[in-house]
Image (cartoon, rainbow, N blue to C red):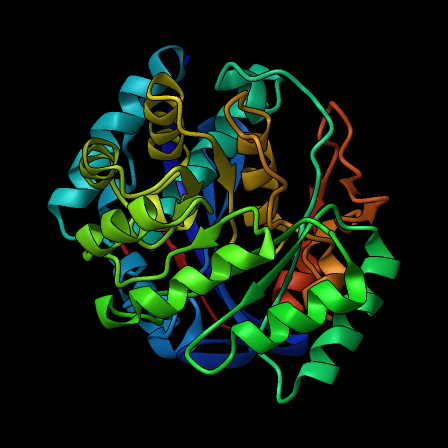
Length: 376
């Protein structure tokens, strides 16, 4: 089965968030996303999402930089894909895009659209194409940093009632760690709990971070800057709480260093950070071979990117609830139908993944769009 790319449509959309998303080094109140629509010969269409946060506080990439990268994807027009050897084709494409300097976010937008098209041609959800089996996927609540602890406690209680989430993750930074954890344990008892520092600490903070061992946490996510793997190794030797890599888990080479040095015991895999589904699957497989449990995180993405992430959650080394939550948890609206929902802490996703992309909503929320065609 060979299919040729006839057209690529890009939509930069903005959807208001129900509350500000605040981490240790920034905040946003509107979700930016770039929807990538790849149209093949014979009428096959695939939908992908490139989902960097505005302001580059979550990564060096921004919606503007990724948009400019994707504007140059006209070189893919007319490219022929052999869907009988799909992984090999994706691998060659990833190499080409990487060598041309495209960021992981831009590559993820294109690559996930191709996986979507491939799943339609094969008549199977993506999770089956990556050799996973269907199972119920637990969702975990993630909350940002608030102005005071009482607001944090109120939000946790509110969202737990709405979705029954299976664990709570709070963002932490210097000056916002011990007190909120103490109050959460005081008010919510032994609820499954973890923290995410988003690189907020340095080696000088190791003695302070050792205090987190007192709170019975599932894990401490990314305490140090992404290239400071050695500090994580030092801290992991000093505490019993597992350290989880996130920002550091952007390529297998970093995982190899982390495994050899004992720098982490859990890995959070994000499609956007690693450049697509194929790379995410390979990182999962590396961790499985080396007995490192993983889970699937989110930027967070809108519905298209979230559903791609849910497919990855089906892989058998995914041992913890995902950060993928209900559409209404973060956004006033979403671009998939039905909206993603969570009931009793479980994502309501059927085995057939019957979700549609609502192009009217994409048009409604677009602030710019372009159709890339031959001769443009």
